[in-house]
Length: 223
Image (cartoon, one colour):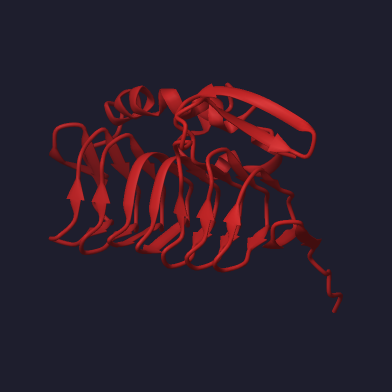
């Protein structure tokens, strides 16, 4: 339920060649920066501006004057980067995304249509197609004891061999306001996390995380 092609639609990101190499999406995290540099060199100057070293911004994107952007970084067509956004590098941001006021991104892939609109921190993470982070929700990317992060799903434990790993959000995942996704979280396709949650481990696709130990499947309503 958390392999790359099980929760992510690769046709909605320029990072498809990178992600398709790996069984699990978090395996791509250490290679994001190098991939952006390789991809950026191939982007057409007809479609992208290069306002700073290792920064490529689509001509149809909107970047507010107060935003801070450090490369390597690619910002896709029709994406909006709002005032006070802080993009710290190794950020591949897709089409029609929103990077909002006081949002901070670092070592991330945002698929097309992703929204991080208000006071979000997203680090060492991958957000799938049309995933949405509610206001104040964050990914925590380092454990308190600085040990390596593992993905835990019940009795199953997958060692990632990564010290920094925030979260993987599947396509159309919804994260409620002021929630914390603890290191190694995987949120499945069409899953929803209630506001004010502290999430650990895996939330299966099509489920609602209400609280620890209270995860239910979404109801399917037929017309």
